[in-house]
Length: 365
Image 1 (spheres, rainbow, N blue to C red):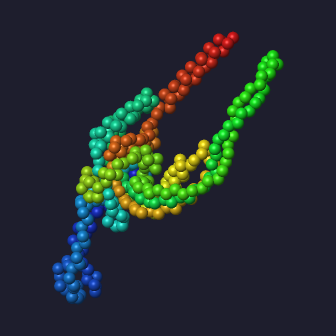
Image 2 (image 1 turned 45 degrees about the vertical axis):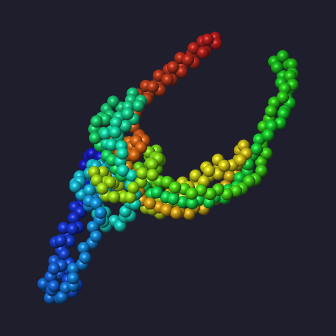
Image 3 (image 1 turned 30 degrees about the vertical axis):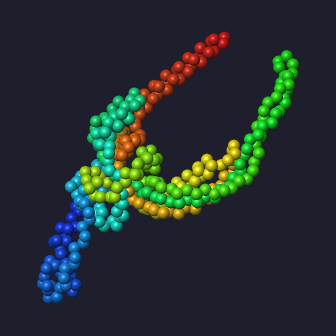
């Protein structure tokens, strides 16, 4: 296909129950299929045991997942959907995979959408309308907003206890009076005084401990870490036990960042927070050679789904994304700008500066 936004796909129909009904059980002696109700094998006559118990059904409606070949996102949806558009890169086709064979962890908690699709679209219009003069004239807003979708994004939620030992050199300011001589243009000298700041340094060390709760690490690579931070915070007191009814009518992305990898990212986040906490705690006027060594003990880890409205669109072969926190309405995104219009503004600014410089020079002459 010539269109870069379209990715070729192999759609796989997911119907394990129908497959089981057709083939049923197999004979332990010869492997011939039987319905599960026969007492003897019709092929070799071997006595058959009782049928295997049916596996427990998952709660809620059956789901499909599809993986985008363009950006790699892994998104879950209901079986009623047969065609997809990736909400993260605007690819028109995707490859479906069976979630029941993936062995992925089930979400523990979820926060439902409180920002409606219409409200999210209005937020996009308000956002992209700011500094509208710089927007390209051929940007088709109506076609873009039609692609906005509500998606439950996976996040790893960590709780941890951090114990840090630190040491640094602390500086305290003190001032001394200094006398100096100034000579003017006629050779006359004047004695003056001024305050000179000095710093007294001394070593200091100590400990810092804190229990961390509410650290969210994206379980997806479909959005960047910066985008994930930009739409936070989420009000985690609204967390509810996961139930499939929450995602009815919405898309839900499966996590692609494994928990161990997310834990390492969380470890780095906590270490950075400990450095900031110790830095804010230090006495004196200044410091240097700060060293912080942190021991982290994770006390909990949950996979949670958080509501986000995602709008991805292409403009001149570049993908732009606009995100709305589906709980609080906080937004972030990138927007295309007209290089020609920016050049006009820069040229006008340069011209104004040149005129001001010329006026100053003429006034001095």
